[in-house]
Image (cartoon, rainbow, N blue to C red; front, side, top):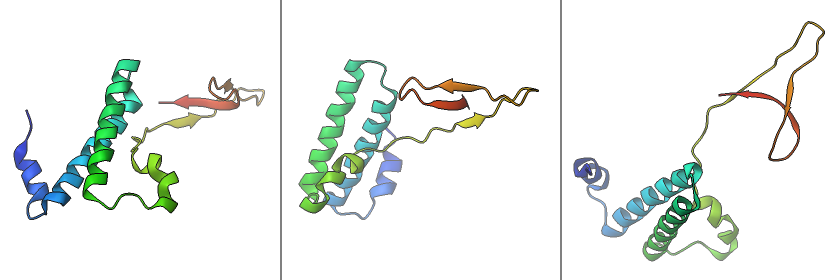
Length: 114
């Protein structure tokens, strides 16, 4: 169930275009988080569609992104959720350090601790 009271408090006194822009930004944020955690292509497709709708709404109520900043559009429309991680140095008695080889770029790194 949608909590309309919080939504009304957040947009009280704003013009309709500002309210639409805020709603579009919330959609954009939800879609970006959804894309980060999507478990299959169907979920990714749905979140991408929501992201496109949010972009269309933002473009309707704004002047659009200036041409010289168009290359930033993917960054503006995404909102990666920060993940908290840490690294651990595991050193044995012979001063050797335990490393892992990353699957994404095949570089060596310390083991990540979540």
